[in-house]
Amino acid sequence: MNSKRGIHGAWSSRWTFILAATGSAVGLGNIWKFPYIAGENGGGAFVLVYLLCILMVGMPIMMAEVMLGRCGRHSPINTMRYLTEKAGLHGAWNAIGWLGVVAGLMILSYYAVIAGWALHYIGHMASGTFQGVSAEKADSIFNTLLADRNTLIFWQTIFLLLTVTVVIGGVTKGLGVAVRVLMPQLFVLLVLLLVFGYQQGDFARGFSFLFSFNYKALTWEGVLEALGHAFFTLSLGMGAIMAYGAYMPEHARIGRTVVAVGFLDTLIALVAGLAIFPIVFANPTIEPGSGPGLMFVSLPVAFGNMPGGLLFGSVFFVLVTLAAWSSAISLIEPAVAYLVESRNFHRITANLLLGLLAWVVGLGSVLSFNVWSESLIAGFNFFEFMDFLTSSVMLPLTGLFIAIFVGWIMRPQSVRDELSDESDRVFWLWRIIVRYVSPLAVLVVFVMGIYKTFS
Ligand code: TRP
Image 1 (cartoon, protein in one colour):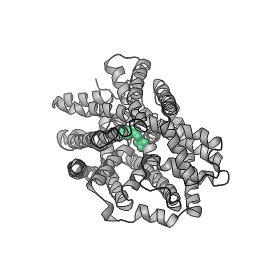
Image 2 (cartoon, rainbow, N blue to C red):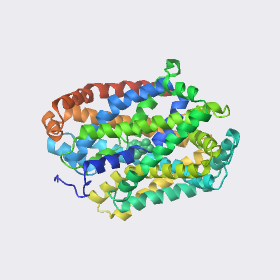
Image 3 (tube, rainbow, N blue to C red):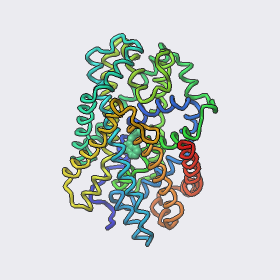
């Protein structure tokens, strides 16, 4: 079953892998989600925990995922099956692949709804709705959108169509190129917003909100959210990076690659936070903890009040859509690869079927922003529940299993062979972290976080 190249092809170089992995990692998680959950959890201390999680849990597990994928050369489900069969291990480890595929589709379901907001905002910006807008006005425009089911469903549908269209064509060419050209522009625009925030907003307060450690604001629920977000933002714990690793060239150093992706991803999240919070604090009507609408209210205020802002604003939301798009393809690719490999599906049928599934489940999230906003499951509305179940439960658990599998179950020699291009120092440091630090951290945070959430 295993060969040096899988059936789905391979990236042309390590650099293409970096682009694809960065494309997957950098998305709504960085620009939309990170700032709003940092806001809900009181800022500084949350950000510190998040950074620690990226370093001690996220990057080591990312290395493990890439390694597993490159070793197995198949969709995550079959990669795990191959690795367990080869080593004569219990089939239960295949759950890693399955959990991932299910989590990916669940995330995609609501991801498409939020990406739909960004799509809708492109036109809003271009048509001048936000010209000179106040924070109150921006807030009411956003709430009008949330109340309008049909518009939400329309954009959600468009986004899913965009996603499956690319995945039908195979991942390598389309988005790989787009990501290389466009990500730097997104970054430039974020820096422009940062400059605006610095000049016009309350930069000092925004900065100290994000970087001063007020421990009192931190709860175990918040720590669990930070850990879950470290997985979410690096696209870990669902096989996306494993699937991408399967297409990686054989002799590429995984360690440095992972550091590059993790660094870029973190940088973009922090810059997004630094761009958003100064504007939030300069406008008392916007609460830092106001939730998923945070960037859709605060950034239009900035764009609407800067020279040339409407043009920049539409370009900004185009780029956010692209960032979301290059992430969404990695949410569906593992499931597609599996259906193609093992169930004889054509790529087109597999995509349409899975896209439809994500669409139907996504309707629940659409409704949770209006008619179902009061229908709660365990205290969460449908969107919040999907988000909690995936980011705070499924991703960390899969990540824990991956760390245990790689650190304790696989033969150390097989692991060393697969990582033979790493220096001894890097390898041993990584191995100690993946054996002890990451699993323990995930376990403690998970148990405490779940306990506190439901007690
Ligand atoms: N990392 C992406 C973001 O931050 C989302 C994403 C893409 C993802 N693929 C994933 C999250 C796999 C978890 C698992 O927007």
